[in-house]
Length: 462
Ligand code: ARG
Image (cartoon, rainbow, N blue to C red; front, side):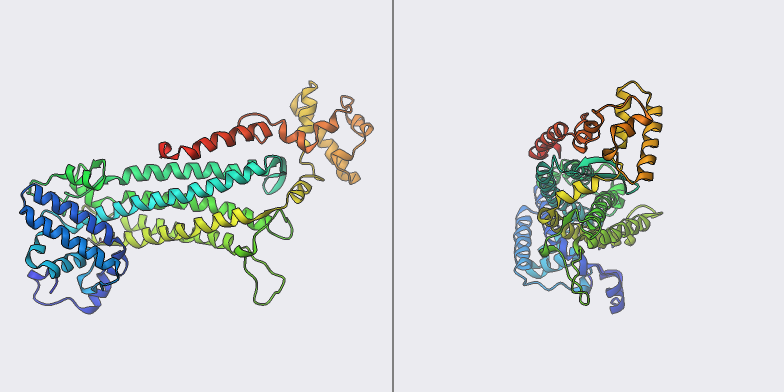
């Protein structure tokens, strides 16, 4: 018989158990469930809601159950529906009637909200440390490439020269924001819902603050209806992780381009590439493609949960059981993507000559040529036109700006002198961009130093 079977005259259909039970996926919450139950039962004892010795007995049995689950000795029962009822059922099997006192002053509605919050808090910390590692790899790679010149693009057309360090540190900044969002979600998750009961708290004199302290929650929820109905913390997590995946997918797209035959800016390590079953020459960037692809399922999980929660009346509704698979699948996906993505970046070979080569030969320094004229007191709009004419002249004559003779320059504007050639050298173009946020050597060194400090002090940032 079901633990809740008193008012029923027959058992649920097998099809019903298959349909509504969540044990197949929520069993991963066993640790949080047991930890939460121990804190709850110890408080029941302390408050004399149940005898202290019985609370101790339940605690010891819950610890035994934890150990038995971890030793693989427990087979969960689909008829017991979910992880909460499975553990309660085991408890009663282990110690008999005393076990039936555990659920005093509690509902699965506040229990599941607690378990999920505890689980998400832990997982956020794991993801934060994975992000820390990825940022360290990016920062170290950037340090090696402060002077590696490459084309910067807009519209995927060569725009202005930058450095690889500048490009890599752009992703570093995105990851900083991702971590900030996760930190905020952690804060919103770190609130104890236990004590909300099914929806309207309970008549027992629970000491919610002591449960919060025992479980490491700095705050407790202030409205019981909200406490059992709220899944904002799950949606926030999925939203944070969707944005993170969006960032990774953009990076992946660039890795795929850079690794292509046409670009050849990098070469991915063999250990993180795959071959083709038919084309012997192929070496495919599967890690980058899969991370890019998995972004879709992470967005899908966010949309699924937003839609599930839409229009749900207060308080708990069984619809909300759908939260877990979306959360679990997203966390699993992120935890699979981040370490391999980090390895892929760490092991890739950078082809600095090809990057440099790609930045030459076009008109990537045209802005700098215009700025040269501005420094000689020509208004920018006029300078823009003059350089436009020069570029047109170059295209007509199949030349680059560097290849034009001084006479050719002067035929368009007498203001040009020999110094134009230094002004449009790629090195000069990059290192003259010496304001905060720019690619110059000095600025990159400065920014990298600031970000080293950030990485060393993450605890105070988070
Ligand atoms: N398995 C349920 C869930 O994940 C637990 C809460 C069930 N509460 C209820 N009143 N049926 O949402």
